Length: 120
Image (cartoon, rainbow, N blue to C red; front, side, top):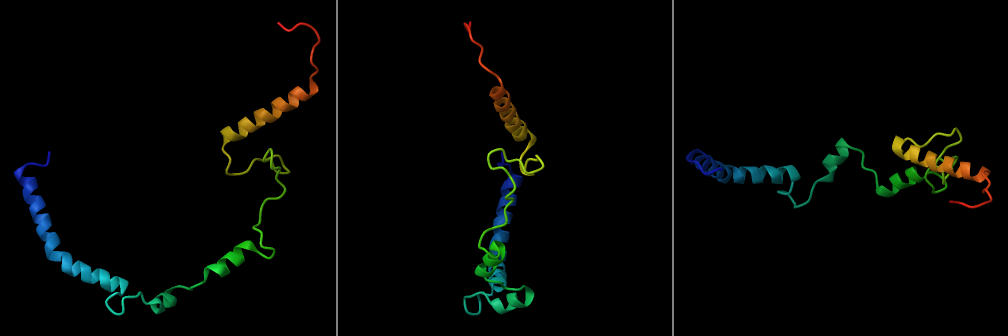
């Protein structure tokens, strides 16, 4: 659809504008990355702005004392219910309903005895 004279002219002018501003834009990018000095980013400026912490220190804080992450250990792994009978917050209602249905079906079949006789 972009074949009209107006669109061709606009494309031509945008291309000329890109050519005109390309050197200035490149200089601004280099200055932003501070590549015009040594070819490396200066980290001293970053240390003034933010606190620099190594990855190992962050992992140690996350793991805690014994090296294990804090987990909800009072939750049943099979049913995913906690001690109050609540499902985890990340579980949606459809999943909870499905698990409850499975749990109730299993509970119902355990108490029933099979009838003797012919099954049609």
